[in-house]
Image (tube, rainbow, N blue to C red; front, top):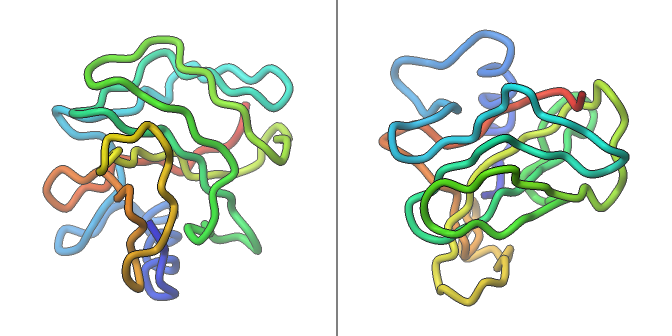
Length: 145
């Protein structure tokens, strides 16, 4: 998912102020989620206790740059099988410092090729689109442990 300038600002304000009742928000859904409790970091590898996704897809990490999320690039991706995935480890390609902010989110494997297709198909979306439940994008802004 590419964050358009207004969406990047909106997402940043979601982090600071909570979700808007009228627009998209970030968080977990009933059928798709990322458990961010107890994330463990060993060097540049993060491990999430469990991640649930309907259909095969990806756990993706987008960096923060200049205090805002940058959805134009990703710094880590791990393939997920449909259903509940436990102890999901994901290596952050650029390294990761304690306290560093990032966005962790789900992307679908839209063409079922087990390759993250991070190719923009329009102004805001990559081929393997962000996972939503209603207006909730399944993702979280968190600080590295």
